[in-house]
Structure formats: structure tokens, C-alpha cells
Image (cartoon, rainbow, N blue to C red; front, side, top):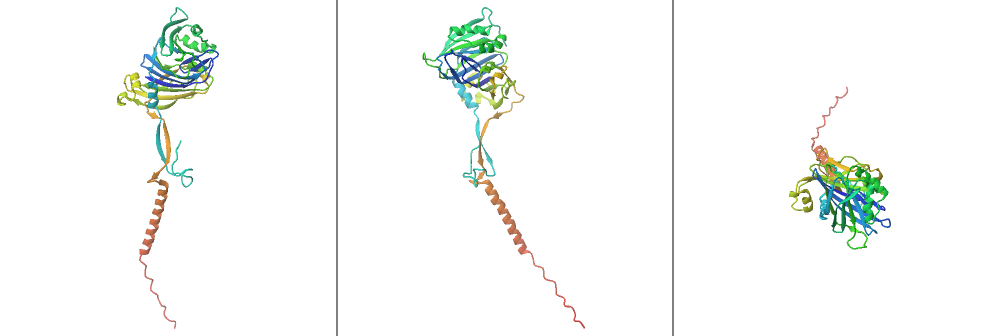
Length: 365
């Protein structure tokens, strides 16, 4: 199965908390993550996440930390995957008609139409161990194990950053579950230029016996958060709970078959291996991020009921350009007129009965 998510961010210093990790900058810098977009795939034993950040601010570099349940491999992702998923799940527009005129219709207004509205044990050799390091495009990627969230401070310090106390506390549940971390040093292609715009996507793969989307670090945010999940699986999917947010809302649910799309979604088809999947899009808001109490786990829904968000355009029902309600009134008037005419004609054709004979009384004697 696959999950596509969009996490709207907010400005936080010195750490930005998002759905899939935390952004850390130095004390004199600020970073705003306008949008974090992720694609998550799970085949029952291996999970992969392709994520892309759109950022702005005055920070010349930043560190991004993401907890994972098992050791991860990291590579650059395919940027076209995000536009394909956006197109696939976009709302549709439909027209619906109404019969009687409304405020803006004739004779009340002007026109006749209007628009409506599984965990692995970390290395015990050291509190933090760098198990891999790669240079991927503008990214310096380190894969770490840690037995103490505060021990991440050493790696951050070596790279010019400081681990905020709140972030160290938020990471503790992942350490207790013996998760590992991917730490990425983000820097622009040109030295000294602030981080701005959409960064190259990263693709992570790691073992996992359940489909989980890390959300716990979002509780560090100080402004409301918005999350969108696009799940591709054998069935329609749903979160197990609200984890402190509003009730999740399904905005799209239908089956996707790459073979029937004739190459329209090459990146998505490559990620799914060309196999048919059921796509479920879920939106959720977190008005009070501090109430987030866990990570999202996804499970199959009770039924594979299709659904798609539809934006309706309301139009007055017309026939040949004439409002149907006018034709109906004219038709009713015509029926009444015809009925009266027939009644009058029938009355005229009715035979007139002869008057009774006049009887003259005999004369009186």
C-alpha cells in the first residue's frame, strides 16, 4: 500500500515539527516549511517514504530528523510522483439543476444561471552510531542509531546545530521503542544562500510490520496543523484513531489500475509495480497540535465504497433557453384554458329541452 501526505507547516524556532520529523536550525535563523509532501508505500513488511519539502526563511542550512522503526536506506526520489498523485485525486466539477428561480434569477435578479458553491534493536556500541552517510544532491544524509534522544546532540553539534529540549523529550518514545533515525543536513546548492523553494525529494526504505505514519513530533508545533493522507492499498483504508485531531475526512476513494491508464502515471505505476490498488485520500486537521498523542496507523475499512469530492455548479433548469418553471406555468395555464374551452363547447352543444305545454284552465260559470 502507499500513502501520500501533505503536511502544512508553521514557523517555529529553533525546531520545526512536521508530520514526518523535525527541522532544526541555529538560534539566529528561522525556517518556514510551507509544505511537506510525502508518499509512503508498504507491502506488509517493507515501508518506503518519498518526501519533498517546500521551505523559506533566512536559514542557510538546517537539519531534519526523522524516526524510523528499522534501519533505513536513503536515495533521491522522483519529483513527478507528487504531481501525478495530485492529478489523480483532484476533485471533479459537476452541474446540478434546480427548478424554481432563486434570488439572482429572473424575475428576481439578472441572469438565469449562477454558480454554487516491527522494531529492530539499535547498536549497543555507543549512544549514537552513524551507520551510513551519503551525499545525495544537496543533501548530506546520515543514518543513525540512538539509545538516548539527548545523544543526538553530539551529531547535531558537529554539524552546527543544537538539539532543543522539547525535541529531545518528544523523541524519547521512539527511543523506548528502539527506533532509529535518519538525520539529513539540508543546504542550498549555492553556499550561503538561504534555504528556499522546493527541495529535491528523498526516498527512504525500512522494514516495518505495520503501516505507520510518524506524527508524534507534530505536537511541538505552535500553530494548527493540516494533514492529508493518500493511501494506495488492496482496500479502502482508514486511520485507527484521531490521535488528538479532528475526525479524519475521506475526500477520495476508488480503485486505480495502472494498466488501464496507458502510461498516464509512470512514476506512480513504478512505485506500485503496475499492480491495481485502491486509492483513499484522507484529510485531517489538528487545531491543537499539543494534543497529538501518537503516530497514525492505517487499517482496511469495512467496505470498499467509492467516493470522490465533487464541486457542484448550480444552474437553473431550462428547456431551449427558457426556464422550465416558466414553461410549466405556461403549460398549466394552457391546460386550464383548454379545459374551460372544452367545457364551454360542451355546454353549447347540449340540446335545449322544449318548454312544457301551457294548460288553460276552463272558464268559471
